[in-house]
Image 1 (cartoon, rainbow, N blue to C red):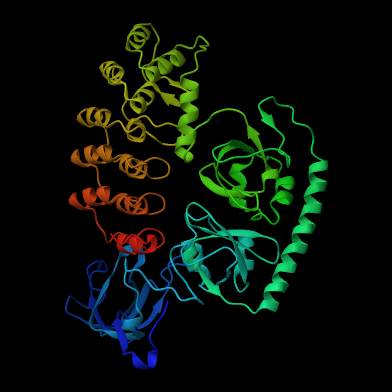
Image 2 (cartoon, rainbow, N blue to C red; image 1 turned 90 degrees about the vertical axis):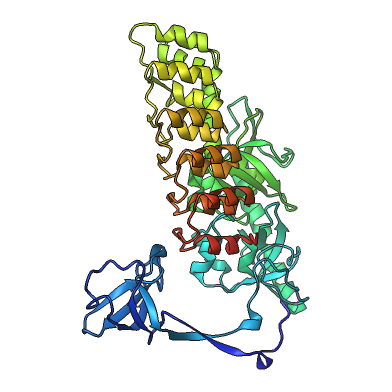
Length: 512
């Protein structure tokens, strides 16, 4: 970014709740008369970590009555103090502060931007940010694994830019890592250093090819009829379904030089996913088990069947529907009931419920009839089940209730019926998500509107501390953001990374 020299800029001090500040009790005060009374004062002596995961989120205060304690100044969005006489925190140059949403001029020699436009294949880059910031910015951009420590202080080369505008960087070790572009700083290297890095990468790739060829030669033939062993001749394309290698030791070998293997990838072993991107070097990006990972093509086998997946919930629910729509019936009356409900066969449902010993809340494939009907929008079936006193609040194995399933299926009319029947619209699943979280994440505007109209709370936080407003900002759904704000969504609530919605919008580059 082209900047004017600092010697011409005005140096300003920033002030606030810093050491030396005189303070009194603030908005979130909950310590009774510890300060000596409502009008009493104290002095901040130090900023400390409220917890290991929340650095510099506490201030140590000595009160005029000589009592002292640590108080929250940002932990989980709480501020126990307010400044009477602010303390000096440091200095800044106002002309050098970026404006959110304003395009920046990129120099020919250096950039550190939040998008990929400043980077090109072949650029050399460094990671110059602190570890905690890097780990935070990697959420949603491939994540962080211990193997990525090699990137700190090491220059890498941009290999490709994926469809999400994330940057794939290779290192002299032969490993390739995917980064949020906001983490990277472009650098200029002298030609001789570029040649050294290039030769190191070539040698590492030759070594890896030797190891992987040996691993392939030891592979046993496939015994299934639905997969084809991945070879150099096998053609993989975007949207192909592939099964990830289930052999831990073998996949570790395959992944060397292809992003390496991280412990977070364990849930993907043996699972089926979808190819969402192919890189120029042949590596593939696969959406599987709730995440996206870069794989060596040798680490997957192509599956010759059509499975539609989008994220962890879609994979789970699609699997459920596959079971529910299966025509084969084993004789289990509850299996018949759930399948008939999923198919919208109201006559069959009515007939089954007349049989003795039939439980309207019976479970098949981990779900009730009401959950199956709710997701698929079968209103007649839902009314029949409710007349037979179906339990509206039963949870499946993931903690999802009928309202979660209806929200996922974009069934706003079903949600209105459930709301009028007294269903808990703010119920949380095992990931602490409400139906509103799911509706926002799926981009179902009508679902969000119905839920808010019937009293769903916009401020509930999921297991990551995100509110529905955080999710709407992440999805760049300005229409849903406006709707949530109309229903008094709190922009000040902080997630587990300490970001309120304004911070979150800045992080995502969402100026609107």
